[in-house]
Structures are given as C-alpha cells and as structure tokens.
Image 1: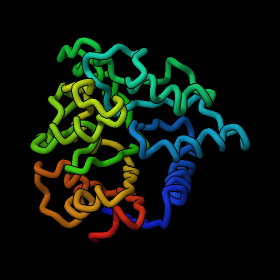
Image 2: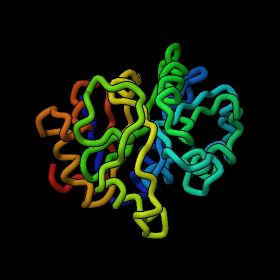
Image 3: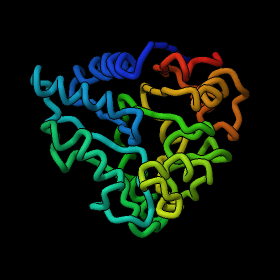
Image 4: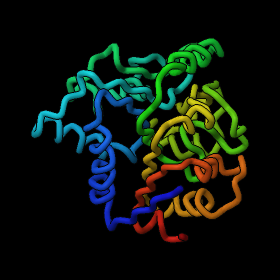
Length: 240
C-alpha cells in the first residue's frame, strides 16, 4: 500500500523523510536498510543533525546497505562503502561492526550468497530506496525477476549513463556490474521509504504506482508491499 507525500522542495522532501526515519529510530535497536546516490543525502544530513543536537544514538543500531559496485576497491572515492562513511557513518556513533555493505571487489557470486546469508536472521525495520529513471530499485534492472535474492548484475546502459555524473561525466569509468539485494530481499523489510525528486523520475513513479506489476518496471513489485511511504517533489509527482 502506497502512502504518497508530495512536497515543494528537496529540503522539504528530506525533512519529511527524516520524520518517517525518526519514528523508526525511536524503536529498540532497529535495523536500517540504507541506500546510496544523491537522493538520500538530505535525509542523512537530517539524521546527523539530530544525532549532534539531540543525542540520538546509533550505538546499538545495525545497518545493511542495498548494493555496491563490482570491480572497485572499498577505499575508492566512488565506492558505496566510502559514500556511506562520508555521508553518514563517520558523523554518528554507529559501531563499524554493525555496518554492512556488500563486498563487490571481485564480482564473485559467493560474495552475493554471503551477503544474503548475513541477512538470514534479521528483519529490516525500514528500507530506504531511491528509484532509477527506468524504474530500477537498488541495482535491480528492468527484467530482474521478482523472486530475486542478492546477486551480481550487469548494469543497464541507462544506469551507466545516469551514474556517469559521479565519475566526472565519463561513462567509461562507471563499473559495468554491481552486487545488489534482490527484489525479494528488499520486500522482506517491514517498511519501505522511497524518495524521488526531479522530472526525470516522473515516468518511473507513475509506472511504479499505476502501471502493471511487471519486471519491466522493477519498482512495481512494491505494489504488493503492505507499507510503502513515497516522498516526492512536485516534479517527480507530475504524472500522478
């Protein structure tokens, strides 16, 4: 079930997303599913601000990230491991042993199996998601089976094009594979928080909510989830 919230600006979108996140943070030892990319940065800034000003502690919180590029080391400036530490983990009191980001350096299928296994006995209380312009969530590209678990995937040309901005605009520098939680893995979370801004996401948002539930739009699987909060700016919501 979708709870759709539309705000005027990215700042307001991030503030609304933090309200949803904060309610989960107040629970006892929650498990957070986290995402990378530019969209959730505002949310993470609000989480850091809350930690600094209000003393909200992450000492007993565990996190599992959605995905990681294949073929670049963890200390690479564009690895998602680096991103999460720079944008959130280095600024809160989370324990490093409670941080889980997929290892994608070798692209071994065993790394995907091991990451899925690490989540076997946990339930994610809230899973943060963005959405790609082609409807992908995490790195589950169009055509990904709805029953997929954590796996290694080839990145769609549109995803590589979209992510080139993080690699000085050079598509040739963007990794061509990633390790990602599968769609079935994501769907196990108790609550989904999906954030999207910009007109380039409007078609994907429409297809996610109103289109047929079909692997051509991986996010459409969320139609079957009982608790999905979708926070949009007016541009991303323009086709609803």
